[in-house]
Image (tube, rainbow, N blue to C red; front, side):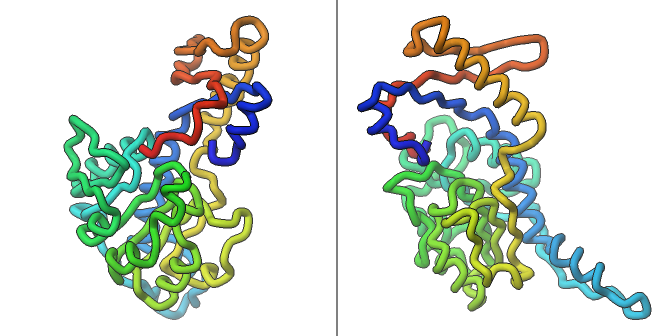
Length: 261
């Protein structure tokens, strides 16, 4: 929703359709994949193996394990919740920061991102981008995370102060980063390309074959709802023999910025 001028849509009477948490599980999978890749240096070691000479022994760097790590989630919405479920399977200690503490959530809550980073080995960033969350991961947060800490961003690029991230990575002030999004897409800082402790992905977390098919079906269903019924009425739980569709709504443009989960 951060790419849509909701005020202008409201002024023009244009309805805005949200598909909500459709791809939350896919994005959560990407987050865990990036975290594992950075920690175990999978991509970096792949490059080393491809360049090695057959007569020489393989060279690799010892990697820390994921199991038991303290992982902080910034934004415990639909994606953050799925990330937490997956981290539990690795016996990670999960904690989180969000706008408000969530009842019935077993993870420890921090009202301040700096405090969260201070007590974590890794941060997974997956909150919406709003005026309040832009650069929520700033230099202070990175330094609190520390030189062995890892940052994974599967939310929006501007959630992280990218210039400070590049500086901290190059100066060894944080341990690594897994990035599926960038502050000025499609531009990616050139400095990141040479760093073995950085894994880059082209904003692909939500684009599995399965989720893209469901998105197409949902677009068709929302258009049908618009033309055959009152577009202000929510369309819920669309089911056919192939899919169960999450709730989605034809939202009035007056709904404003998305809630900070």
